[in-house]
Image (cartoon, rainbow, N blue to C red; front, side, top):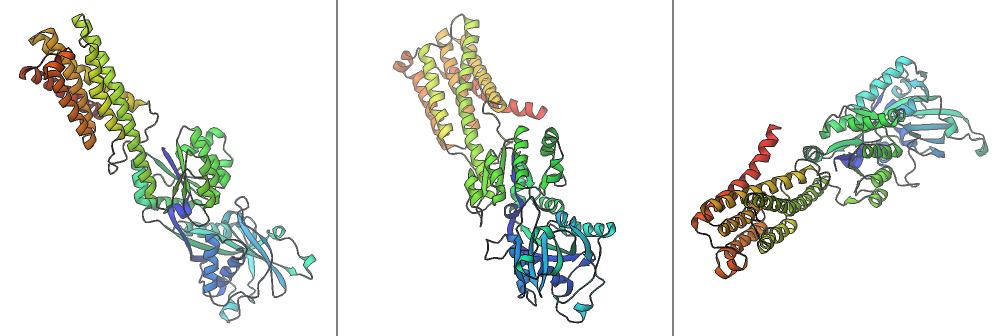
Length: 545
């Protein structure tokens, strides 16, 4: 993968929500009495009853705060509920209080503010100061003018800038209900509301989130946040988590007004997607995929399930109420630890490197052998190696070392690497095959040429054979020096080579001749130079590039 999408709540954050603050357009409110307590009570009324369905963490945090507040709200009688939906953006409850109908609304500031026509300001506090109950307080409201809407937006931005989830709270009182049949529909009353203020919910970021984000971005994985929260809140959490370019924010409403190519461009450049619905999350994942990315989606809730299913890698975080996310996921984090994502990425890339190294040994070595045979035939008129010698080369260089590289245990403590591997037959493998083949041909040609200058044709062929094997084994050891299995198989192959060359009967069978100190010195020098060049030259070329 090269893009990892995080849902915010319960993923980058701990998901343990609690009331942090309350505010009106005039400033902060005290939740212990007056308008602050009334605001909290109305927000709690707009939450679904806990015995009806499993409480959302936000609703639970509000109800917990209301339960700890003085007074209580025992006379509130629920008549009808309007549950929260992502497309609606608010929840509402119609109830009776003191014989009159009252509507409590709680939701995203954008959706609630557009339905408000008045606002409760700080100029009518006589009832609270006189010690009257909050329910009997009838503070007068003022028109929600353009200036007051700007004050409201300033309060929202101030709270959201601290990384808090901000919800707007409003109410509307209706005429007394003569009977059950005379009761209006709750959804029809969600207009001409009176804005009471805002409640701010704290969702603490996971302690390990910055470290995980740093590890992933350092490994070439782009990390983005996809959340239904306010843009300022989402950007603040993204900055705290260390996500690069956290100020590049786009909202779901903005995506709705973009053409497909424009959406794809914004998907490539944005780090935070805020105020998005489950449908938006699916569209974001699809746009990233169409842009050529391999996308992973991480989430813990029902709202994330469709995007998790669509992503190339769906990652479910085990949490309360996350059955849908886990069912849709390819990978499940049972402990909810984000570090497991980096562990899985590290293990996957280690396996990928093992496969790539094994293919490089097989394909690169054979390419070098073919190149040496072509060069030798062009210069000497006949092939430097016979059929049995070629079989010996394949057995000592391909069979055991390549198998050891493929099956040997990788060191998972090493860094994640240069970035996503991309196609298996892509540039890294092509580069490895070219380097290995070139080094093998170089080492063998140098030793074979030295043998031709210092001895007979059969001795030169034996030196070329030894150099082909030694050069490939040297490259294998240089790239896998930490693997004991690779070291053992390589040393065993060297011992078998020495036996095949110097043991008279075996040497005769393979068409070789025993080599003296000078011959072995030329072989070792040629092989070491070629293997060393295969390690140094790519680094120099990369540094120059």
